[in-house]
Length: 164
Image (cartoon, rainbow, N blue to C red; front, top):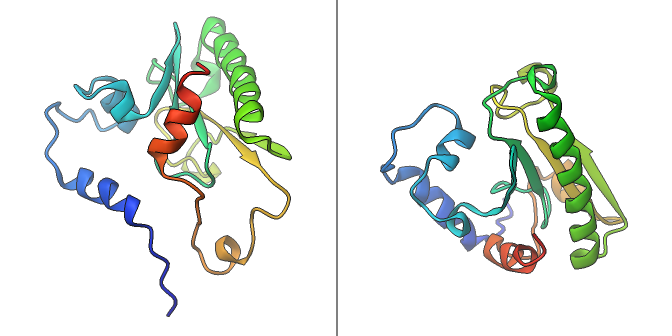
């Protein structure tokens, strides 16, 4: 068996074992919003009026962002127009920032509604935006079921924070 070392992941493993000072709501996104931790500790890049932008702590690639409504809603058609308008404005801004910082060849933008559609947090919808490069997905993800990231989340956060 091949072993790839990613020691920065240890922080996340240990974080799951640490009792929270805030009672869990059962929704990871609501828990982040209600957390006593700082935005930097939670990797929140921007708090807008109806949504917030955060780094995905289980990224597919460096620069993997999520845009999440404050409202705990499972489906897009439950959201008011002001929430969805701002969500798209933030997606456009995220694309601009990611282009400036990472110079990718393209982007993935997506939302999954419901477990059957692949939503990891089905009860609170959110949008993903990821920078992509030609050849960035290789046998590691497809066959090895392993992701390789070029930088720690703290570095990604520092690169992007001043753009929001």
